[in-house]
Amino acid sequence: MFGRRALVMASAALLAACGGSGESVAEPPASAPRLSIASVIVEDAVTGNVVFSHDDHWHGFPVVAAGGERQFRVHFVKQGRSPDDHDMPPKNEWFTLQPYADHSLPVVIEDPTRARWTGDRLGGSLGGLVAGATRMNLRVFRGTTTVWEAPPLNLVVR
Image (tube, one colour):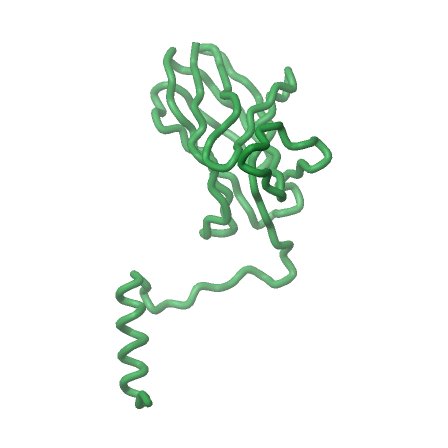
């Protein structure tokens, strides 16, 4: 059996090995809705065209003109598809982060000289700066904790 001192030392060693600072992090309120995400759908707000993630890849990619801007809505799906099912998730399964006020959707463009994203947890605007291609990363956070991350999404600026 461990003595109290050995238990404290083992806990401190575990915290140090995991990069923990020993500070406790406040948990979100228990009343906040739980979120389950299997894939993300990025919908062009004007044309209705969509691109969607499936496991480790995407079906489609957004295109924006250099000097232009496109508005997108972001939807999610809770239930994943089988690896062989590459169909777009049915629209009746889509949901947004609207009821999840404690969640955010920061979108990062890998090459910010090529394109920029401004938006919130419901969608945003993709602005084309210079012709070419880059990727964008979509992550869902609850506070400072990553809840879900999509595979990088290719985008084209024409």
